[in-house]
Length: 484
Image 1 (tube, rainbow, N blue to C red):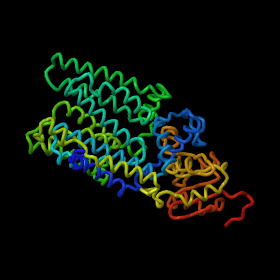
Image 2: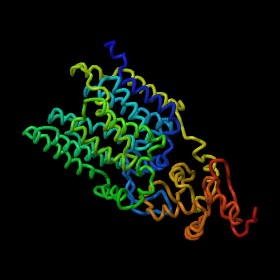
Image 3: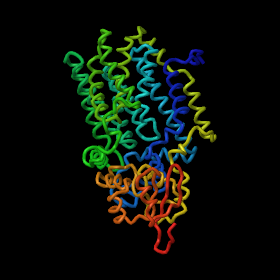
Image 4: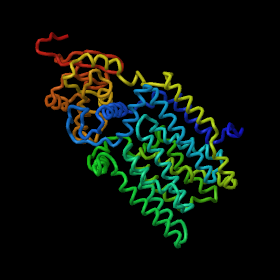
């Protein structure tokens, strides 16, 4: 083997740095998303039944209501990984996926002409922007699909070859649509590339040919997502979530970035840097790249969940503005962008460690109420439970015997009025009286700091079954029970 294959380059360093940061600094943070639990439960149900769900079967408040599992393929994979290697296996897989994504981003920037050290720095910066979604959730795979689609469009823009990756884009988008609702980014990237290519230079026959190629790809990528178990209902589900349900106003990740807070500081720095650097360098972003950057900057400024994708889009332009071209010829760029053997060796080592039972991470016991869960399992399954929304997936996945939740973080399933009722109940005011009379709750499981918890502690009709720093579990007294 060539000795150079053992000498790490910029992309290798990014891989190792991201992997180390995620495995050391994010050992428990990767499992902080409340939806991860119900993704696991649905994956196990699909393996068991051999079919995807078409109605809700996880909650008793929405039992039988039509619902689309837009991430069913991710759910299957998560269930297989967790059942084979436990939660550490899911952590290891997610960390490796993230490390490879940003390493491939680095390699791609170098192939486009960025100086290796600049590409390394830019990759780490945009990884910091993306870290808000470093979670065991299907959104991580959307990062990979976005990066691939950007590369395929760039290759067709530069070369116009019929054998470019763009030919495969509709198939990639079809697979993407079975993994995450972010598949809409695929057609949008192709459309941005179409417009960007159209304005990038003289309107000659070759440009018209490539614009038509982008147009055909856009049309196919818009149709391809219907190759899923739900057909057009997938589109209907996604658009209902985004525009019809009214719940996006209640979801933090759909809000504009809260500039000034630590989690958005790097995004703010990148945007300001793109503006300020124009004053000190003569370089300009080419029109094709500018079209992508403008479109995704708009999305990132209207919804913070798009900020990680904006980071992937803006990286090549930022690297060019910050450092110019490397000066390597094409073969030199290929050599500098090539991976050494170390990422593959380290990946194999991490997989072996996870399968061997090495504890690579787990749930934060201070954040998740596992002690209270054990007490909940001792209560009759048929009793109606009110609980924290974030714990809904945990109840659906981890309770033994299996128990249905009242609510989880699938906001589109419940609707705006239901979510507002839930928030009102936590306050322990009149909404609690109305909802509890309607729902006839037997159990209440919430954080000890909630106003509802303080009210029920004073209510002689309820008794405390369990209390710790993370959760408190109440049970309604029957008429014959003596007050505490």
